[in-house]
Image (cartoon, rainbow, N blue to C red; front, side, top):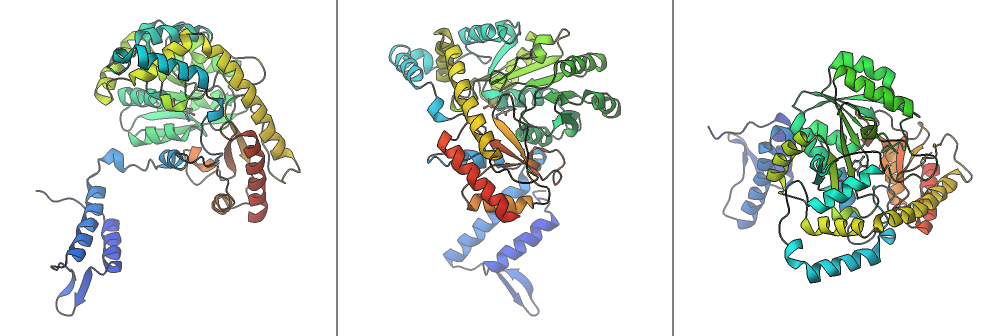
Length: 447
Ligand code: PMP
């Protein structure tokens, strides 16, 4: 009854490892067997070996899904020493509101020790929710604090929503390409992901109707403003159309909006949540992209009933968001630093976007192109489809430049190898020039 089912591929892998470690012996008449001797070194090797395969075999079905470790790899490589990468979706530390954060932290630790090192309510620190409720008015969203929950970044917001609403086997519609961590999350819980094509006006709502009829989806996940990875913003017409379709077919929308405030040119569009008359939209946002990712403060806007349901899940997930971070963000908003800070980073990121675009365009490479994004974090760069994408990433890393391969953002792996996502907010100005030069050299060399 304690037996564990083992895959054939695991057995083959195990056999090969045992052989290379010298832990297998073959004798005529006895067959092939694992050597277990009194030699400590040998036995340690054997136990290490068993341990490795043992854990692989007992993971839950959902953990066995191939959700990859691309995010933790970025986090790891960028941690500690500052590896200058164009791959992450990270703000530049030079743009942190240093003086303000120092002042706020000193005050909190000196004067409010008890408050900031104790627990907070599961759904978030009420004064912070009040501030966020005010902030949302600028985005056209009227939400009372009861309709807001503070989450550990919008990544957790999405996770809580997905685990609350989606069953294994349910269909989720997403823009294709879309944020790879969302794709991985949907797949991990066993959802069937269907991609909706995207053009310069955002999600193709004409195709959406057909896909809803065909697949009967549970929800639609969208990043309508400065989409990750393409930088595309959904037009007004499509926003209305998407909301109409969502109401008509009764399919709720998850609107993920981490970049909406980072517009460098043109007029702002209202969020879907601002246009939502029938409470069809669950809205996610975060301070990660505008202030600091490491604070891990994001939020969800949803009907009060849904917030309560999400809270009961959050309670058993991590109890609440870090109290010090919540108080920090509350003080930051209350003292009126937020707007000034957004203005300042927008100016810097506009400069960096233009610089990266200029460097890419200078003696431009044949069959490589991009649309200049009007906001957000990324340039979605099309490289010639004659290039082998694996060779290009290998050569680029050898040449000291890293980026996100486009395939990661597609539902159907292996397709669409000719895009790469370049982040222009994290590198310093001079680093952008250097990295793009290296990228272009790599493209030339791989050709
Ligand atoms: N959604 C999208 C579209 C993102 O690009 C990101 C960050 N890369 C997140 C959610 C997660 O952000 P947070 O740090 O708030 O968890």
